[in-house]
Amino acid sequence: MTICFFSAQYLPTPGGVERYTWNLARKAVQHGCRALVVTSALPGLPEQEIDPDGIEIYRLPVWPVMKGRFPVPKPGGRLSALERRIFAQSIDLCVVQTRMYVESVWAARAAKRRGIPAVVIDHSTGYMPMGGGVIGLAGRMYEHAACALVRRTGAPFYGVSLASCRWLKTFGVDARSTMPNAIDPDALAAELAAPQPPDLTRAALCPNGEKLVVFLGRMIPEKGIRELAEAVSALPGVVLAAAGDGPLLEPLRAEAPPRVHYLGALDHGRAVRLLAGADCYCLPTRYAEGLPTTLLEAAGCGCPILCTPTAGTEELLPGQSAFFLPDTTPDAIRAGLARLLDDPAEAQKRAAAAKQNALAHFTWDAVFDKLIQSL
Image (cartoon, rainbow, N blue to C red; front, side, top):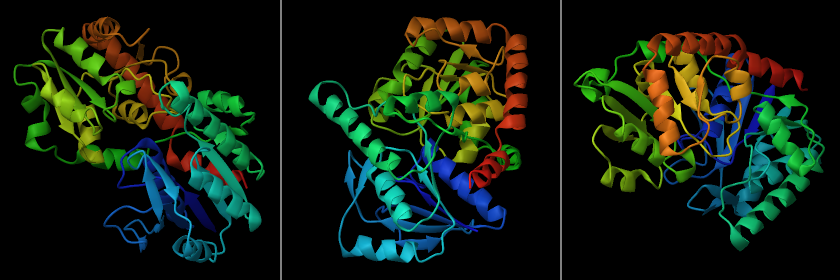
C-alpha cells in the first residue's frame, strides 16, 4: 500500500502538525507501506529525497506567505511536473493535513480527479490568528472558502480531538471521528534514556535546589509565555526553562527576569528529557490548537501538567489527571503553579494517571490502525 501525506509544512520546520505527519508516515513504513510526504520547498533542501526513515519527500515550489507560516504553491511548469511525478506512484490513500492551506485544496482536488481515496485531518479549534479588522475578516472568509472547496471533493474529515470535531461544524462539516495526536512509547523511552547535555540538566538550571517549571512551544503571544514568565518571577524558589523559537524569543530574552531561562529551539530528545526532569509542565495557551503534542509528551514522561482546558484535554487528561487554569492572567498562573508545586504527592498522582491514559489510548500504532480502517 502507498499512502501520500500532504502537509503544507513539514520537518525540519518545528511544530505539532509537522511531527504528526512524520510520526504517521514513519509508522506506515514500519507497517510495510510506502509513505510519501508532499510539502513546501525550503531553502537548501532538495526537491525530492528519501529520508533515513524511508519516507519519500517531495517539496513543492511555494511563495512563503506570512514569513513561511502560510506557504502557497507557485503555479507553473515545475509544479505541474512534480504533480505528475507524485501521482504516477499508484497511490492508495491521500491524507490531507488540515482544511485551510492552499495546498490542502490542491491535494484534495488532485486526488478527486484521479479517483484516489482521501481523508482530511484537521488540527485546529479556531481560526488562524490574523488579528481583528479587515485582515481578520478576510482570513476567516478565506478559511470558509478553502474548506468549502475541500468539502466538495467528498473526502471525509477527522479531527485530532473532540474539540476539533466540534469546531469543524463552524464550516458545515460533520467529522467522521477523531484521528488523535499520539506518542511512540518505545521511541520516547529511548530518548529519555540518552544523556542530557550538562547545561540542560536540572542541577544546571536549578543550582540552588529550586523547583523546575518547563514550557515548550512557539514563542508567540497566544501561547501565554510572557504571562507564565511573570508568574514564575513572583514565586520564590521556582525556575522556568522555556524552550522554543518564534517572534517573541529575542524580546523575551532581553527582558528576562531572574530564574527565567529562554533556551531557544531544542531537538526532540533534549526537550522530552527536560520534561522528564521537571516538577511541572505549564501550557497557558490561548491558541486554537487541536491536541498539543507537548501535552501528550508531558503525559508520556510522567510530568505533572498545569494547562488551560484546551482542545484534547477532555480525552487526554480526564478527571483528576492534571491541574487546570481558570484563565491565563499572571495571577491565575501563579496561583496554579503554587497549588501544584506545594503538593508534590498530589501532582505525581495526577501525572501517573495522565501517563497511564496516554500510553493506553494515544499511540501511533492505534492511530495508524484507525487510518487504515478509514479506507
